[in-house]
Amino acid sequence: MKFRLIIAAFIAVVAAACGDDTQFRVTGEVQGLGTRTINMFYVADGAVHQEGQPAIDGKFDLHGVSGEYTIVELFTAQRALIARMIVKNGQTINCKLDLDNPYVIELKGNKPVEQWSEWIRQNAGVIEIGDSRQVNNLVADYVINHRDDILSSALMLTTYYAPDNESQADSLFVLIAPTARPDKLVDDYRLLLSYNNSAHLNAKMRPFSLYSYGDSTEHYAPGKASYTLFYFANQEHRRDTIVRAIDAIYDNYSRRRLKVLDVSCATDTLSWKRERPDSLKWTRVWTPGGVASATFDHLNIPRLPYYILADSSGKQVYRGGSVTVAIDSLQQRLR
Image (tube, rainbow, N blue to C red; front, top):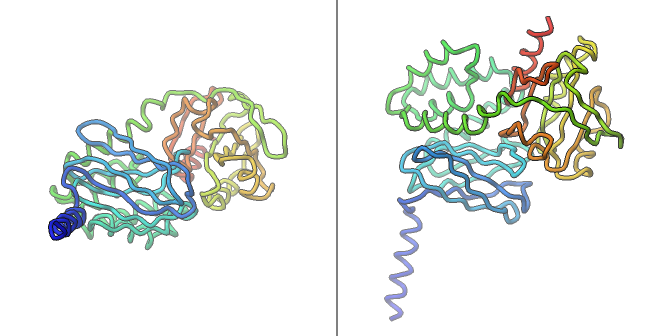
């Protein structure tokens, strides 16, 4: 009897080590996450799937199902992007992540995720600044030198900024070997992007009154300025990079032409007030629930940090994850 139990235990260990071919697993730890919820999004069988759980001291263990490679995205409950990876059934991805610094990343479990985390670490300085031209050059260099790697497809889909660079994007994509750019991976991630973004492109910024830094109230109305640049972030993001980029152009325009609003997605006002000293030239506001609050929920902001440029009617003329592109869009309109 004892021998049979030992054999059964051995088989269970071997099975766990080999992985379950009917599902994939994403497990590990996020420094700074604590007991907050972590959510996993991916596409399989033509549908967007979401799995989530409260972390335990930053540790998590999530499971999904995809017979072919799919791009998985991990978010906090406040929609701050934690990490991306490529995975399929039978694989376990082990993660070491840091909420305060997304460039301190280590992924293990298959070749693509190991290459991806290494690429992020090596290019952290450029990625953090967020200059789309420099980031595009990094992606292009990787694609040209790694045409047989599925990571080339993943970088083109998730990191390359294609607007205004469509022809170059197409030229790069065709360099990737067909086996490294499976149609399903491409179609599935585009569906995930559509789910996160497209349906809300036509939503307008509505007037609101929110708690602002200095224990006062900010009353926003679209017609107060020709353009208003909103940026949504929380204490986990390196705001200095964002602030430097905006500060470089802020004084070039009057407040009738440009208004900037820093929308904090901190969990509470104490965390918010610790984010940085009261030294910004523009207004900082906070709302319970962050981007999921009633004020901003209709915009379906998919991740943090995120930028929206709205005109005097409240129409979104830019929305996306690049402060550089947001500023370029603004400057083109205010010439």
